[in-house]
Amino acid sequence: MATLARDEPVRTVRRLWPADRNAVLDYFLRLDPETRASRFMGNVSEAGVRAYAEQAVKADGMMYGAFVEGVLRGLGELRPMAPCPSRYVLGPRAEAAFAVELAFRRRGLGADLFARIARAARHRGVVDLHVRCLSGNGPMLRLAAKHGAALQYAGSEIDGALHLERPTPFSLWYEGIAEAFDFSLAVSFPNRIGATA
Ligand SMILES: CC(C)(COP(=O)(O)OP(=O)(O)OC[C@H]1O[C@@H](n2cnc3c(N)ncnc32)[C@H](O)[C@@H]1OP(=O)(O)O)[C@@H](O)C(=O)NCCC(=O)NCCS
Image 1 (tube, rainbow, N blue to C red):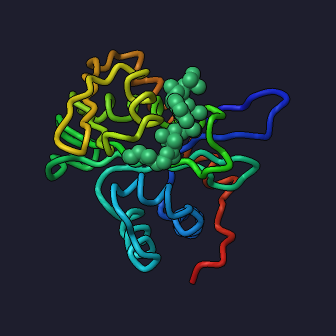
Image 2: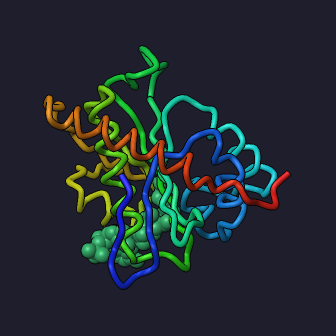
């Protein structure tokens, strides 16, 4: 659901839809090389990033965006780790990935995205939510640990695993409202302006 902070630039976190394609593409192309390397756990060319962004808006799972003054500055992805059992359920294991543009870090966008994604995962049948990153990625490791993820080393990578609680009738109702609100926001304030072809 959207979050607004007083005395700060207008900030919104909401689900991204196919109509946000241009904003998503522009966001991925704006990421600096270091952020790209951290996000994709290796170097990715501009063509690679473009191809990734194109498929990301259509792939199974969902994406959430953190907008500052109407521009997408942070993006979190939630992807099932096996084929989705249905349109509404992701299955018991899913993976999340995040990146926030360099100039917009340490303002809580990563934490907002993490919390939103964990909540969405919980309400789509996910029991274990994983976040993978390189072992030297202090910010991501701290962010995951702060949300209760158990960190496990696997060579140069770390897998953070978060065990999610089962939804309750109230939490399901709340998630439904948040999703409907997200959709209204996306329709009312579409972020489709972009230089991308
Ligand atoms: C990880 C990342 C998404 C965090 O985004 P962010 O918006 O800066 O994070 P927040 O401001 O919400 O910080 C949330 C918490 O993360 C941790 N954190 C974030 N940046 C940190 C830093 N530079 N050093 C130490 N801890 C940090 C802290 O625990 C922080 O909580 P605190 O502010 O109460 O100390 C961001 O650093 C990023 O985009 N990194 C590059 C991409 C990447 O590495 N993705 C991971 C692979 S999927």
